[in-house]
Length: 77
Image 1: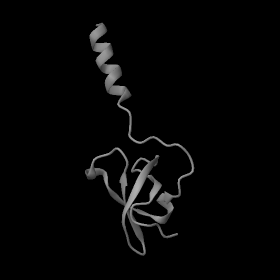
Image 2: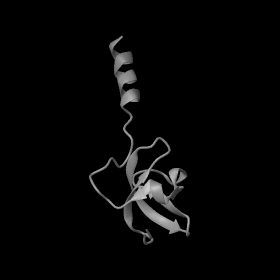
Image 3: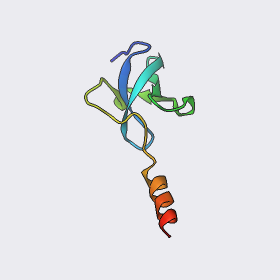
Image 4: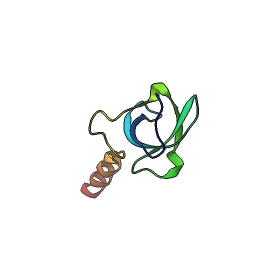
């Protein structure tokens, strides 16, 4: 499937989690995506099995729950 530049899609990150993304560029083999809410350092080329049309409400960015949990634990001790 071919996507348009600027199109909103869903793409797998390196850990296999689907996130909202935007198409930046594409070739015959891969699509360069920017994960919405993430810095440009996380942009990556994905194959056709790692990108799909929007199907649901997905996380825009990872949460830092573990960091917050550690901070709260530190404050309590």
